[in-house]
Image (cartoon, rainbow, N blue to C red; front, side, top):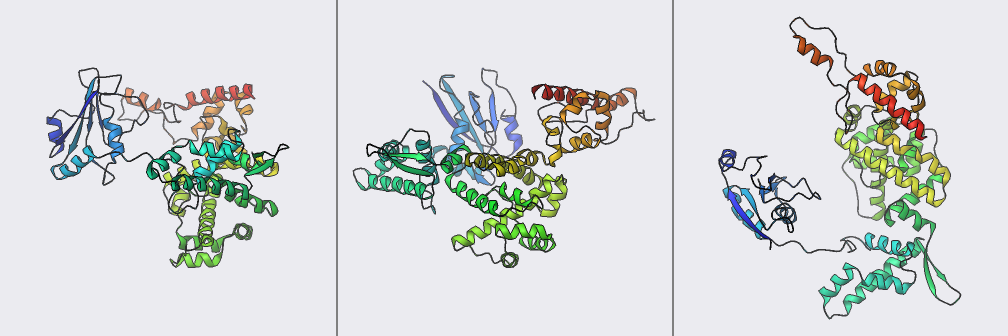
Length: 481
């Protein structure tokens, strides 16, 4: 049987930790290593230990969450691996009471993800769950949907909370009915009557598109509304209108409203036309610049999200036109990390919206939007999309190859590695091959062989090594095509 004990240790300074023998990275002589962590970085990794040492109870100026503490301490004496284990929590004397409370705290109760959150009329997760069971054919009739809902954790938790109170079942039933009514009203599902008088739920194209694109019903409605409006009047004088359609709805960079107003005054006529079509208002920007942003009604919330989304679309337009990250970060007052995160989320969202259009049968829109998944991911213009399929090429290296006449993988595959090497040398800072007066032979040789091209998941490469790999991968792509 597993035995796991928690030990509380308080130490005054780091030197005390060393004297106590709990040095970072030290390995125990037994079968299991010490696991020393401020916050468990190995979530989901099966790494059992005999002893777990947690160096502090604080993380981000707050006491760590009881669930996180149990996750880390639970690696000690893992069932089926060891018979016993111990966890050591290191704290300062003035943190003793907090540490004791953390060790003895109970875990929060498990809650269903289908539960209605505060401020929501209906649970978005419940809407999607019902849409999924109807689209998959698991539930076809209203009776089937009720049977499914009664088998969920939400229904079980409501029953246990209410006990013998019959209102518990009534609450669950009314929530299911409300979700079904919502899905029918918004045309995600339809009710079809059979020849025998029976009723069957079937998904509409909108419902199938929502599931295929991995959007929630609420997100799908917002995307559908914007795309439907765009189909009536699309601005193709620039790429801003298309980019707005693939800009994430929620994960937007918070704008500096005064700066946004200044940008607005310098926008070209065609970009202002896009802004007006999507709902951007100059008077809203003026009020926001003064610090007056009303959010009392649903329309005011919608206006705020439209303006934030348009501001993010302006940032993405600069990125897909190969503007340097540090330049865009300075211009919009955000960090490079935020921009890189935005690129990733926008690229994913572009793929979701493209699938959404495909399932709805809006093929013209699909063709317009499909190019942006890779363009947003790599931050390149359209002509470089084919080249960045080669994993070693980023936007800068792809642009150098393109400008040198190697415009696609086929032309790279027919080029010699020496030609590619010459081009790559222009993408890295200049290094002299000569030996300096005060430089030793081995130092000069080391400098000449220095790795100057780096790619994610690979070790550093010289220009010659990188050129060989680029040509080899280009040939593989051509063969696969």
